Picture 1 (cartoon, rainbow, N blue to C red):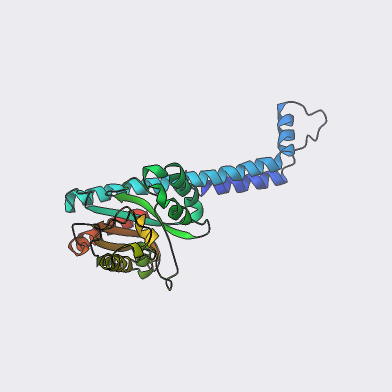
Picture 2: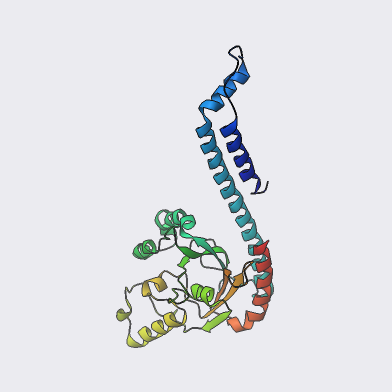
Length: 283
């Protein structure tokens, strides 16, 4: 059933209930029909409210089902790409498809993973940072639609707040969203620096501090705390914007990160492959 059908049904029901004479006109009129009309007459408001709730729930169900179907299709595309172009190497390569969603949709799921399942993903020293990044209901965010590659292949509540184009982006994904064109960068390898046991950059040596700050600057990370909660710190980073029906509006972002293969080596094949994902998202 299409989403356009329930509003028609609801509108017709409201009009009928509002204008229908539901009283038993004949005092001799008895039976089930009279009792039914009496019930409708006494519960018009409740019926309308329940009908509106059913409409909201129906639309939510349909939208979730459509999103999940698209996610499964795109995940299949990513799996095929990994097999054909990256030798199935999920340890060194990762591709994430981000979508734009309002915080009100992300709020409860984010808190669930942060508070209830927190111990499975992060040490508790990062809890404060995670809570500070809790989505605000009225703000737009880039959130994970699907991901192929580790770590956190099945962890899909990573969010990045979308800032206006004239503000500093808080991630490379938001940078690509605002730029609206494919971009990539080669980063310093900071995997040899132990960032887990320090709380600020001043605790690093001068050379390590310079390397980390350069990494943050090129990857568009504004705060050291944001760097620490990343699943990993890749050497190669690239992003491809996808567009909806409006070619001027970014709808999704494909992010590539790797510790092995430069984005320039996979750019042509990934850009070509992204066209299939873009078509799947539009349908």
